[in-house]
Image 1 (cartoon, rainbow, N blue to C red):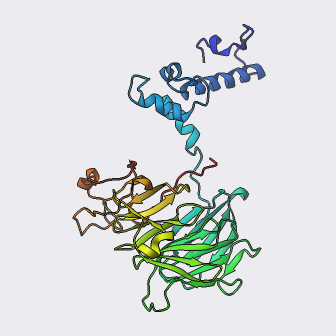
Image 2 (cartoon, rainbow, N blue to C red; image 1 turned 90 degrees about the horizontal axis):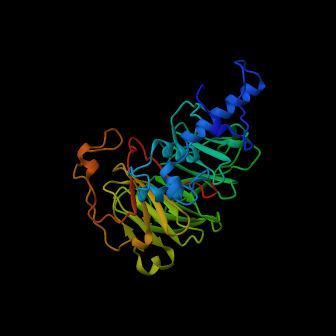
Image 3 (cartoon, helix red, strand yellow; image 1 turned 30 degrees about the vertical axis):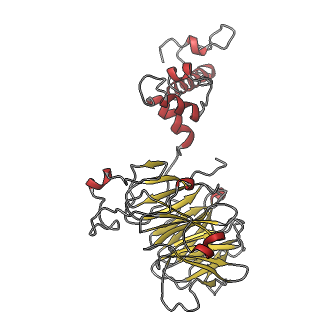
Length: 387
């Protein structure tokens, strides 16, 4: 604190705020806080070369897009972000507090999700429990749901767009729906509240199957599910019946979602390593997907739509997340795989030799690596648009 800071401490009139004496009086405390703020600002600001070359970079906070342009154009002369650039970027986009324990149950938390507006958080546990937390009220338990006819675990949950209803799935063809907006905190299936069952099996279907993924449509009128029977099912809530069943893949359908508000397009991801796009307007006539997206070498664990009917991201057991544009999809599929039938993501590490393998017909726009997709169906999401 003994260095000369008169240049950055000037108040604009030529006078300095530097205090005399060694005591920490009000003026000295203010000076100390001011100097720490200045040092922090300097160390978390963009690289000076970026500030000089890219218009507007001298202002804080700097535009992320312009910083990326500067990096790609190598304006800093270093070919990469400096430590200050990274600090500036991460301070705007990454959480700075936590993690901390919100709750602890007697069984593993298998699935979780935020509501679209971030006000609620839903967690599903293997011990037949689902809890809805009110994030804005210090994570208070808003709803404690005891599930009905659970098989193995809660495989997925979905909250309706109006946040009034919650559906939960298990390794069963029956989906259950709960009134999440009621005043009842303890929701015990068919004791304190009715958990209506929605049958996703066909009339002539005597086989038992499980449901890995369930999602509401954006208007809340339909549900789409992915099953262990390699199929996609659409349920009409108004008519209270199954409206469409598609033999979609060659293996488990781990993830499904609607592409946009129209509800016409559906994305699916399977253990056969393919992402597929389905257009309900022409499926009855063709019986085929509108297109296939190739690039993953192993099964797809999750898909998330950007909501614009064009872009989606997928997480795969090949330890990658991929960004896709459905305008680049094809009609043919080529499944490569690792050629190692003994590898199982549930209890084995990913083979080192496979980390550098690439699909020769990879259609993705970008591939993101560095994380692990092991033990369970790890998910991926776009950041909320309002953020």
